[in-house]
Image 1 (cartoon, rainbow, N blue to C red):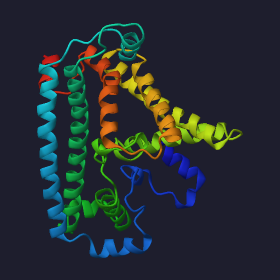
Image 2 (cartoon, rainbow, N blue to C red):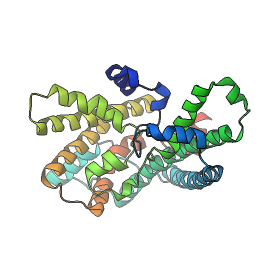
Image 3 (cartoon, rainbow, N blue to C red):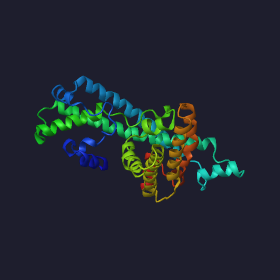
Image 4 (cartoon, rainbow, N blue to C red):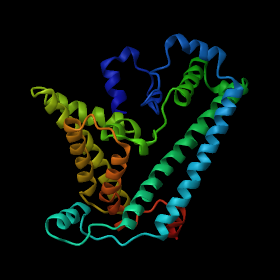
Length: 310
């Protein structure tokens, strides 16, 4: 909404209705070219192409759902006991004060599976949205005398068609194989949960760069990156507190740590691109993010939700 309002103020004449901005945060090829829009409205998407598209996404949805159910039940059944001491403090204690081991192999594995639950659940929900939208578009094409055609006028119906086509065929998936990331920027800017990426840039990065416009470009990017990740940290702190009444700065510090790590990588190791190293880094840092949820028993499993309600 904030981004749409900003665009409306900057260029009111070319701003489309707000509904157009939903799910249109990462277009594959930009907006549908104006020259192609009329062709799409007149010719539409061939029924066999749309049917094949729906079938493929039903299979994807089922796979994501199956992995989600399996991993989520694992997190409930095999939840480890987590220390009340924050993860980064345990690391410092281990390396500098000869403290006990800061984690175990099983805890690392468990946190990786927990992150997989988040990944599969969001993908599963996103696939449901894609399938629903595809069925709606198929319904519009196959039922020219439906109630929908009666309620909406021609311009509204055309706008709905283009929005559905834009969402289904011109928008990248919400995740882009994050496990193949070769550096921090690729992980956070291209592959990981991109739904809020533009929001963090518009609300955090760009305003901060503007505030520090008197400084060098490097400093602007440094503080802009910190601000974008800080917005993400605040959002996750809010999610944890609103769902469990559990307040911890571990979420904030985790994202700020990733921001600092990204800045250092860009400054010193920009040419290094290694998916194995990134996987190792993610695995070791994940407990910092996941452990607060484990402490307060926040699981993403159906049976857990049912047991909590009963």
